[in-house]
Length: 206
Image (cartoon, rainbow, N blue to C red; front, side, top):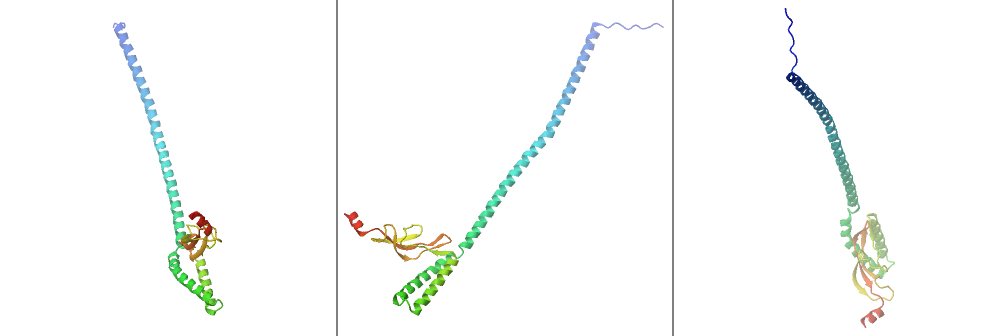
């Protein structure tokens, strides 16, 4: 039996082998690139949710802080309003009592002028003291006027008069007593204000 001889490789066969080798290298390279891309994609998939969660956590933390600040401000405002409501709750009642106090004061003045040592005068003075103590216990304080400088925040000028004793712009007489309630004006005092010596008025007129 005769041996078959392998035909020698031709140039065409060599080129075919080279082409197949190049194809294998390209396919291998593509596989490696695909593996790298899959690896990068996996890292992105892992990192993106973590970054998103961090941002979301920061957002909710900021929102919680702002809500807490608003709640604190609300509580402070409510406490302040409650305090003011308590401090000024009797404001309307005291305002309505003031005309009664005015009438009583005029009666007391008349009684003292008539006879300061009479039983009526003494009794009315005791009642006046009790009224003053009641007003003081409620936070109402009489405004000091006579001899003081006129204050438009506390006083209401009824008229102006010349005076040699009282400086210009100061109060000569109090017509109606004024009061503050816990440092808030309850009623302005009606007063007569000095415009200085009469001689100064004459000089100004001339």
